[in-house]
Amino acid sequence: MDVEPVEAAGCWIEDKRGTRYLDLYGGHAVISIGHSHPRYVERVTRQLRKIGFYSNAVFNPLQEELATRLEQVSGCNGYALFLCNSGAEANENALKLASFVTGREAILACRGAFHGRTSAAVAVTDQPAIQAPLNKTHAVSFIDLNDAEAMTRALASRRYAAFIVEGIQGVGGIRVPDPSFLQAARAACDASDTLLVIDEIQSGHGRSGKFFAFQHAGVAPDVISMAKGMGNGFPVAGILARDAIPAREGMLGTTFGGNHLACAAALAVLEVIEEEGLVERAATLGEELARRLQEEKGVIEVRGKGLMIGVDTDIPHAILRRRLTRDYHALTGCSGKNTLRLLPPLCISREEMELFLDAFRAIMETLIHERDELYGD
Image 1 (cartoon, rainbow, N blue to C red):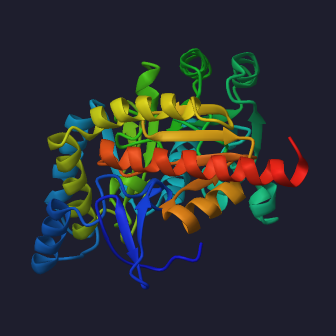
Image 2: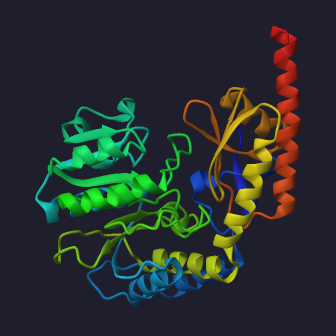
């Protein structure tokens, strides 16, 4: 996009020309609590004045504070926290942990999945175009999302270290796993001594209207990977692994992961999420936004949970997205074959939501009229 942001606050960014844009994308769902949130800026700045970084060669009490706070806010009890730097790295470590503890090398994943661009993460990503020959040496099998029968049959072979699935498929077109599918996955993993890894990198930290999207299904994964909204722009990621997993010291490691600044950023995010009720806000506003979008002319289907919404229209998403940016200064994303992807900061107000709905309605009317003029009714 021909936008060069130089300043941002809340749900708005300003480019070098002084044009303000309503951010409905959050930089791939990274901006969770809003751009330049005062609480976030204050905590990160205060930490930087004290100490910004040292490696895990020393004790960092902020890591313990983050683990405790994350447990409280997420409701995920009985998990150990390992901190790293990016979503791809979180998934690498989740899969590596599963292979360590099971002694197996194969992984089961879903078609349409996106788990990252590093070696194992891209191998379990269903996009051959971004897999180098090196990545294709991994033993990976794919099933369709929500095909419980195929998943159960595959896991019964007892050859897989892990079954990895997104809480909600993001790049795959905002595809939501059926609760019954995740429940069947939990049962099949238990029966085959396979680790259930749920990737909450895009769908976590309140975006789905629950802290983690898998909580809609009432299951407990063995490993949860997270990133993006975890740091609100600061690179921080991690995995939560059930205490029952027999991990040993030195099994996983990192230089930058869990540094002082990263922990300060992640703690500030959790504090704001809880104090401002952003999980509940995502659930309420997301449901309303999805319902109203479904009523708009030219909309085929709306999918998602909370403020992770995919909108299929009868206008190519590349055209729709470009014209929303150019004509109405609204930033959106895209995914799947023809899905407009909405991932706004969780602090979005009802007034800002109305601004977007007005813009969406106007641009759809314009594009439909232009199409009909060109091709006939």
